Length: 149
Length: 210
Image 1 (tube, rainbow over the protein chains, first blue to last red):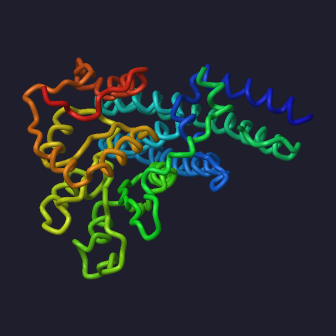
Image 2: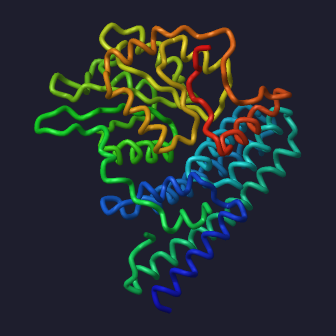
Image 3: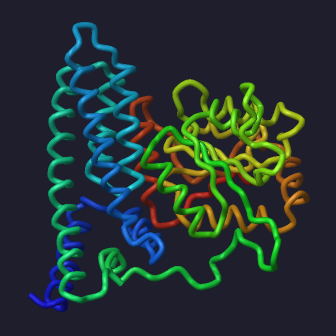
């Protein structure tokens, strides 16, 4: 496929991500910061986010598995995840975290466990979408097209 | 449409070199950024670098104090190190909060003149007031945008010392002119701040005198 077609695909795909709430305006901010000096900035930040989230989800699973659940600890992790997802524009993950925190406040174990499942799911979805997006960008570069303008 | 902007994003205008001053040998604007979040550190660093600021990023309040030479035996700064022109710190950090860091800086004769900006994802009025009363120049809502940092560095650079002392002279009014609604229940703190951070009109970040 040539660069033009790939470009069109990328645009459509990105529009969809915004429409479906996976990404928000903060993601635009990150793209604006990318330049010739830092051509991989967005990929780097998003990759950092993925790593960090995997760590946090792990911590959350452990914390929620404890006999004497420390809600403050759980809330602390969710707060961190909320923050980092907001910083990269991962809107759906961020919104799930907000609900999650409310349940932590209420000390509702079952609801928290459910939220953990939802946030894991949302994260997996986002990760897959972002990988597709970055893949498309790579293909465009390989096809000789310029990276996202 | 936001999506179009995502792909056809605009390049920063050529004159965005706010922090680096023209002329040889002119000092650059040096910002010390403090945040426990790996992702946020990367973003704030890029934001500041894109405005040609010199940036030092640290992960905690105690690291920040070490860097400034206020804590620990090893004064990493040394005599030739570039002086810090601005400190931007996250509020919620394990160990020392941004507020506690602010107090330490304002309590130090060597560094109290350095403007300190607090960043937080939670817009809690009592927290904001506390920080401003303690001498913070501004309270920025996260996620921090390029326009926030650009505005900040612009007014801090322009007139510098005078500007800084002007802000500090301002007393906080009893009521603040903030455009966000108080949470209806203790549980809805987050949802309020989240929804308002997505509003189309920018919320005033600093408490304005009425």
